[in-house]
Length: 83
Length: 148
Image (tube, rainbow over all chains, first blue to last red):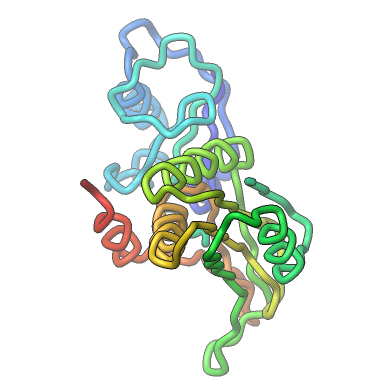
């Protein structure tokens, strides 16, 4: 499964994506974020205030409690500033 | 119509073509967002990062929601990404309705949702380097007023 990072989060991590294989206990997107944060100090620090981030699953914004089951591409999205 | 593009576009031509395609409409409201450089804090460019696949999906959802909620005849969103210089058009929304109230409300709704839910991130290019534009709490408030 691919995890994408955007904007200042991508910059802080110094990479745009990761290819990951989470263990079976990672069921939801929230679980996935917690698992990723536990493995990466920079990501953990960047997401100190997790409520500001939106998450997408296969290019659709979804709630954090959405299952990751079968997902191909997850993205962690900092607050958006379009328009 | 939804268009996420790196290419420049002519907002006047887009508006005229959109209007011409719908002779049953009595009201058309458009909003155009422009790159600005403030005299006391100038920028040389605005760089818009985008997640195109998600942007197209989210903008399509926002458009469809606006059409249903305000009984619009049609709605369109055009949004650029890439490097834009001051004076260039960033984006445009168009809302077409039988009467003005729905067209105004539809255009406001499209803008308020797009600000918080469309995956674009602005970075300002200045003489001292690049800086990310921070999301504004008032944008969340503007979106929240449509909740029901």
